[in-house]
Image 1 (cartoon, rainbow, N blue to C red):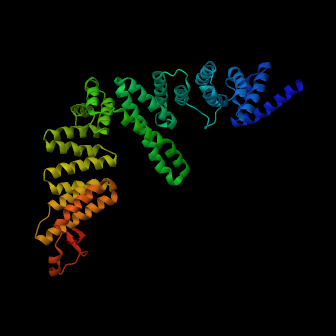
Image 2 (cartoon, one colour):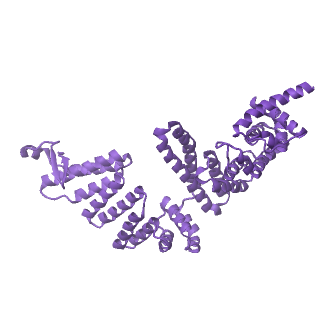
Image 3 (cartoon, rainbow, N blue to C red):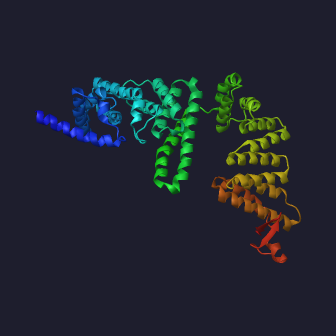
Length: 461
């Protein structure tokens, strides 16, 4: 018997020597302690690791539990192994009493890890170091997925606490279940609509940012890019699906939510900017509450969003000059070129409606400098060119040909506007010079002609 016991100890000591090397030379023995208890810990450590390696979790459970309770600082894997083992045991268990026992132990794994987090991190490698937020996020996930009597509100608070700490580093699977938890909470209580909208936007922004990073990794680290896309793209799709299903973005409902709150937070710039972003994202940026939030935000700090809000309010009230002033200011304040392009296009559209075609063309071209793939800017340029047509029938036809070029360019850079581009082209064909008259004038389709300082291809009808 003694020989078998010491043989087990020898195996355990061998395993520990390997583990000790992994933790940057830290002596595991110091963390286990000394004396008879330490010998029992070493023996149980060996037994649990062997059974765990064989995926015999029922056999691994008791010796693992002994190590977990007697030597909480033995090694970090008692927490990661324990969580994985208990998840599997809960999923397979049919006896409700045992299921609850395992679940309670699973929660204790996270609580004890949080209590000892600083000490555990002191000997962790870079790969195994954890933050408080990371542990809470994983606890929230396990509570949400494995609790026999899960309380959605309790799960939500747990998720929210962890994500507040993790922010843009929140793991995809945590976001995936958090947005589902938030959706269920809103579905049960529509009064928390604002929370659900905030949660959706936060999850969506995290996914957006990481998917953008994946594009940057695409050439240098293809595997990393694929991993990010594989994790965060399905999560973003789930976020979008649940949000559409929820009906939370109804503009009337959003206005009711924010009317009193904007007034109460009129000196809180962060809150006001958050409201402006929500209303803009869901195309509710022509509401009175949007204009009011913009005014308050602008008084505190001249931000692009606030300037746009003031511009749209003035435009709605018929003050074109005032609107243009704030649109231009928004372009100057904005750093994001995509938004600069959007604002520049907004100015071009106002100028076109007011008949200021020359300036409209200038802002269309400025839009395309910011974003060459802005198809709508090419379509508006085409409309400007047609409205500028002058001269005899032949000279006017050149304008229609150049306008057609712009529409073709719009389709090439932005396939989403192909239908509108084709519709405009179909309308321009009536302005082409007739083949019958071109023959007598010595003109042929396809030859180059110049109009408005640009070269285009002669088209005939």
